[in-house]
Image (cartoon, rainbow, N blue to C red; front, side, top):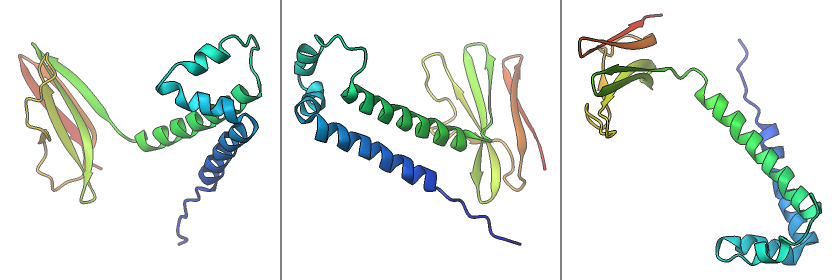
Length: 156
């Protein structure tokens, strides 16, 4: 059986391309780039460059392309890391509960946590494990009836 190799060349190339766009913006528009970097501390950039009535110029275009590439990388990484995460909510009176799976020792343990209206955690900082921990679980669920919470899951 062949070993699966994850290749992240696209990620490396994208990051390098982003850095090239930032470096090009700095080289081509040194003063404007420095004013732009200092925008957090003062508003000189806005005072000076707000008068430009161009829809988009080269400086803005370079930084916009960098933004688009960076946001795309962020969305792709977020979607890849959230794939397979399940969590469900239930409500009983003024208390809300959530259940999800947490991988531990090659098992997916169902972890539950309850919250009050103020957002305080009612079942400790880490929540509670709602299985005996000796079996892997799938499709965790939580429901409420008569002010009580009920949990369930299936096994593979």
